[in-house]
Image (tube, rainbow, N blue to C red; front, side):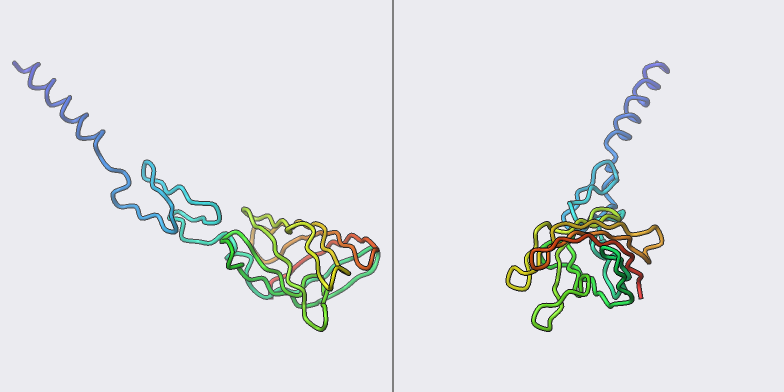
Length: 167
């Protein structure tokens, strides 16, 4: 009889343990879903509860120093904001110091982790300027980005690289 009672208690304990809802007290934001107590975030969101847009850590005012085909450009202002089209998109205003008609160009890029990838073949200034490609990486402390890109300006191509420093 004791064996039967202990057997029933063991089966009951296993049944109750396996029915425990590990997601009961977990709230995943921005369309995240909970699996076994852990939030699985949709593309463009991160954090333990999917509460942070991927673009957030890139946003702010930056100064940029670069070298383009042997010439240096120093300390010009750049602003990075999250793009409204996606939580993993950013808009870089003042990119490379280029302007059209007195207004800074705004280049769109995608972020993934600490990496930035410029949307290829963006055209500005009535086709006189094309930002062909670009990539960058945010450092671990979040205060600088190493960056390189290629462009074509009035038919002449160039390559630039430099560093964004958070202001």
